[in-house]
Structure formats: structure tokens, C-alpha cells
Length: 445
Ligand code: ADP
Ligand code: MG
Ligand code: ZN
Picture 1 (cartoon, protein in one colour):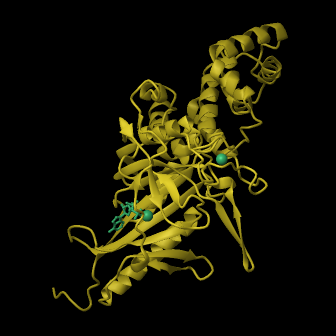
Picture 2 (cartoon, helix red, strand yellow; picture 1 turned 45 degrees about the horizontal axis):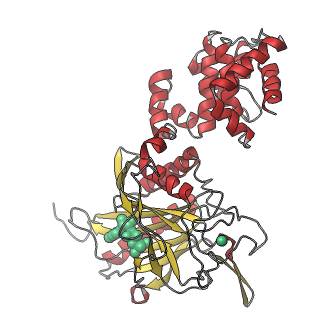
Picture 3 (cartoon, protein in one colour; picture 1 turned 90 degrees about the horizontal axis):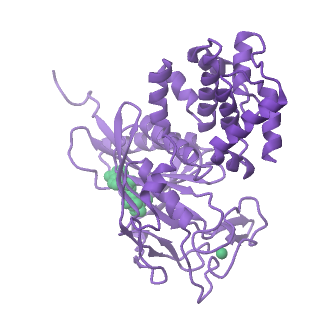
């Protein structure tokens, strides 16, 4: 068959992703200011350190380092024994010091991987710790600066250019968001800017070895939907350009949602030289020392969502799709497992419970796992209503699970479910759930 004019050239997209996530630590990365800045009066969460005043000295937030390590461990990274910060120098009004404290040559975590849809493995180049900048607001001819965000802990996760389709990119970004929430290191809300995506895109001829000698960096994309649209658009634009014989060069582009197209923001000529050098005001830190205790950190990490999803399929005989839905949040997964535990005493199967949760979608914040069983049985199943007996069970559940009790007292309402689950297990599912909850709340006051 004749090749040529009518045959469309086959191109393959090459995509790498950079994800920034703001940590939900109490204080900022290098000072004691509150990191909870969202919606707060501008410039009220500041001090000489995060305002970049001369002579102010930074000190490292250990919780942030621990959170960064957790993310690295979850992504199967190597955790560095020795790590240090560097200054990334550039001028911009939202950066009062004239440099961002970041990591370049000695990142905390390197060489990880994450499996995405279609059994593809995405290699993670690095997971490093840095700080956020202030926030600029443009009003007419004026620009306002709010430094409340300046110095908030930020973790950056960089992949190798291993994506070849937009579906894998979407799946990866969603998995990271789910991971941050499971680890409770960030709310990872895209609209609030807790989580930000940058995609690097190039296109090469299929079968060609090596990487294209250019890449287009898509910046400032604040939703999954826009990211998918922008990447789709870029792949088409770049293919068309290459087919016309044009040469593409390095650029930064943004997404215009009104016009549904990308537009150029910066070309290579304006690229930065950040003049990285080690931060002289912060000591290098050693992670394997008793100070950070990788083992301890690992022990306190939850089961990974993708591991949980696999386990649910095996343990409960539910479909892959249902398992994915039930493990979407850690809270729903916990709710399901408590209900299953409770169901055992009443001959209600895990499958029935899974279907109920997926189809009826009860609000698990106000619903109890045992109510699922009652709904499915069509009758009350709690027979222990005696308050004395219930109080004993509740106390036992608290004693067995002090972490959940502490979490609840610290404001984590979802932790209550685990305690109610404990009561159910201790009573072989016979406790009256509503009363048990009341008594539990009384004890936790
Ligand atoms: P920078 O800070 O300049 O963006 P990084 O090293 O932090 O550089 O990130 C580079 C990102 O670009 C990585 O995710 C990498 O996988 C990706 N990348 C590198 N080369 C290409 C390419 N030819 N096409 C698409 N993505 C690429
Ligand atoms: Mg980049
Ligand atoms: Zn401060």
C-alpha cells in the first residue's frame, strides 16, 4: 500500500506533571504564624520572617517535613538521609525576600512511582518541600498584596514525562488529591488553590526515541476539567503545527476558559535563571536520625486508597467499580467496614451493604453504619438499650481506641464512627446505635 499524502502522521503526546499542594499544618513553614489563612483579614498572619524583613531568621516546621515524607513514602520514594534547603532567586512583588526557600539539589524524596489507569506506571522524579508566596489581587489599576499566604508550607511533586494520554493525567491528579486527603496533609481543594497543577506537554512522532527538544508548560490551571481541556487543546495544536512543518519551541501558556484555548504567557527567551544556592540560615537536616523516625511515620500512615480498593474487592467480593466508589474517601470506607462488621451478626452481606451505600448514598456524617443494617433488615436490630450496659461498652470502645477519641475531641467528627464501630463489635452488633451514640458523646465531653 502506498504511504504518504493521505496517511495521517502518527504522533504521541509526552506529558510530565508538576503538582503543588499546600499543607494544612498549624503554622507556616519557617515561622510560627498561623498557616490557616484562607478568607482571613489580609496581612494579619504575618511576622518579620514571612514578610522577609532584614535580619529575620527562619526555622523549620517539623510537621511539614513529616507530611512531605509521608507523601514521598506513599509514592514509593526513597527518603533522603540528608536534605537541605536552597534559595530560588527571582523578583516578584508577592515574594518579599527576593527568593523562595525551596529544594533543588537535595530534595527530601526521590524516585517514586504511582500506577494509573490502564496499568501504567508513572515515575515520580521528586517530592520536595518549599514555601508558598503572598497573594496579589488586581483591582482596576491597583494591585493589592496579602502576605497571609507567604511562607505557608508547600510540597511539590514532579513526575517524569511518562504520560501519553490525558486520561492518565486526570487519573494521576485525582489519585494524588485522594492521597492528600487520606493522609490528612491537605484538603487539596483545587478551587481554593490548595492543590495546583502544571502540565508540561510535547508531541513526538510515534516510534521516535528520546524526548522532543521543546516542551510547553501549562500554568495556573485551577480545576481538573480545565486541565483536561487545556491538555487536549495543546496536543491538537502541537500536532497540527508539526504537521505543517512548523518548529515548536519552549513556552509557558495559560488556559482561556471563555475562548477554550491556550495562549502564550512567556517564551523561552524570558526564562529564569534562579541562581540556586544552599540556604545559609537553615541547617542541613538528617532524616534517619531519631528526630524524624521514618518507621514511626510509616506506622502512623493509613492504608493507601489503592491498596484498600484492592483489598475490598478480595475481602468483600465487590466489583472493582464499587470498590473504587467505596474507597473514594477514607470516611466512607471506614463507614462501610463498620457496617459490614455489624452486618455479620444479622446475616447481612457486604455486597448488600455496598449496594445500599452506593445506590442510596446516605449522608454518613449523620447516619450510622448500624442504621444501614436496620434499613436492609426492615427492623430495629439494636437490642441492648440499657444505659448502664451501653456506657460500659462505650468506655471500653474509647479505651481500646484512644486515638479516635482524641481525634474526635480535637474536632474530627468522623472519628466518632470508629468508636461506634467499636461498640458494635464489642456487643456483636447488638447495641442500640442511637443510644450508644448519645452515651458516647456524653463520655467524650
Ligand atoms: P521546571 O521547574 O523548569 O518546570 P522541572 O524539572 O521541575 O522543571 O519539571 C519539568 C517537568 O517537565 C517534569 O514533570 C518533566 O517530566 C517534564 N518534561 C521534561 N521534558 C519534557 C518533554 N519533552 N515533554 C513533556 N514534559 C517534559
Ligand atoms: Mg515547571
Ligand atoms: Zn510569619
